[in-house]
Image 1: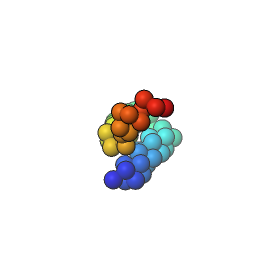
Image 2: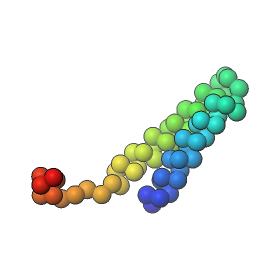
Image 3: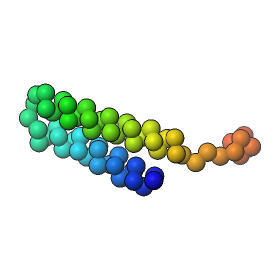
Image 4: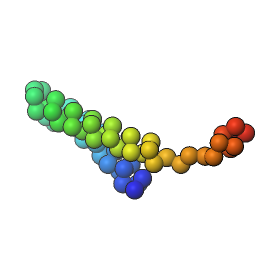
Length: 62
């Protein structure tokens, strides 16, 4: 699951950068960029929720 989220995150960031160059300025670029950004934020949030959490005792010893 994490590898899928990482892959989609990278694709969304790449698509967002590509759209800035490939799509002419206007409403279309804004909508596509917003969608790619929302996708990237959702993948980032999913990865954050799926992170491995250490037990409380291990956190105190570090």
